[in-house]
Length: 318
Image (cartoon, rainbow, N blue to C red; front, side, top):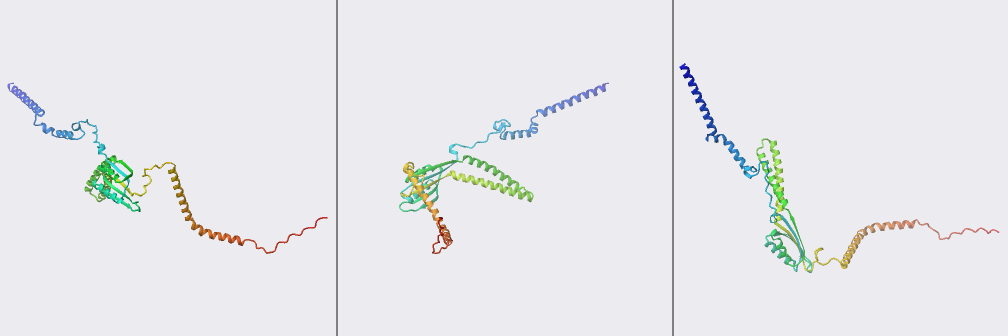
């Protein structure tokens, strides 16, 4: 009995020791600071990456699932893309001297002469047409300086706002550039000849579209950076083109003058048509008239010189 009691006591003590050891291991697994990094290291890295991603609550302060607004372009007046074009007609004493002065004014603004066409005349009827490219910020001041060279006859200024076109081209160029880059990456990893040929064609098409968009962007940039001004210089005796004279074009005398001009123009057209038809009338009309005359002449009956005998009168009845 004593031996059985010792065995039972030893079994109870061994069971208690085993249970105490298992409880200590479980507590160490839950509360040990050394084990926490090993178990949650991947989760912590994932949380850090999520916090760094744009559009998350940690990064932008927005709730998950909501789109963050894209940055709108700056469309203030001083940041807009505007194309300026103008036409100026000035009557001067000496066309060549005025043209030289305009060249100096254009060079002083940082622009250049895009075209120079001159016509010489007698008695002060010289004319010149200059096409100027002037920086947009000096467009107005250059026009004022040119207008003071003589008697201003006409001025016309036009503006075109191309800001939306520029913004659209920038976005399309960005997207097309990304497509070209992705196509080049696929081309570098091509493994078969058929894939290589297909990708080369696709990349060439994308590069062509990108070059076209970039060309349009450069064209708009040139037009917005440099304004175009067409200056017409007239000599002291040169006629002012229609629509540029400041005189009154209404009233009885003006209508009479316009009617006379219309009559002269109509007579000129009529004489032109008659001059064009006269050779045909001579070439075809004279032979036709000769044929008709001869035909009528030879178809007449031939008569003798004797007079016809009158019929005998019957005797009167008794």
